[in-house]
Image: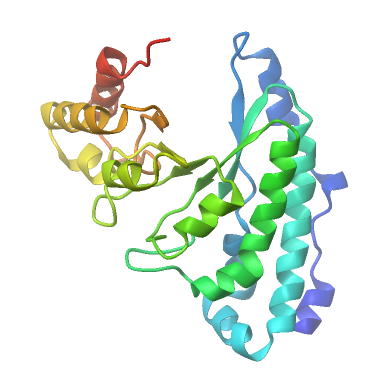
Length: 246
């Protein structure tokens, strides 16, 4: 509600600590960079603050309130980007924002374009102006908005699930305009045998490596139920056949 909005203790960048990111400067090898995530994305924070069902109602009944909340979130995330973009050892910034589920986006593409994507464009533009790449992590079926994300200028897309779109299909469709990151399906990592993981990983590399613009990795977070041997098998295949030659 508007009353909640006025009472909410909106975070201030002056109160934030970047000590953990700053310490990494002294711990990484020369030439290595780190990537840093936001404290949740624009849509995720919007949903967390308002609740998913109240948000759906507010998009129809109180769009001015949704706009006010989104702008507060966007302003806060831009403030975080400004600090991170000044760090030389930060090479890329994440937009970590789950936009959808298996069949569609969490809110309509029209609402994403009205409320969320303008802030994406602002964040990406600022990062690019300061020499940083921007990668999005987003679960869900983004087929209706993928062209929007590419137009915004996002450099790489992460989170792939075979039941939605295998990473090789994504690379074939969009790979000339945005990099594909990860894509070794977590279901495979969790349930397949070690040899099956090796064969699967090798096949993905054969399909995705040609032409560049692909980075090997898991399709999503490496959950604690993923057998360590399977995760290591994926990495070993990457070292064997997945290294780009200069």
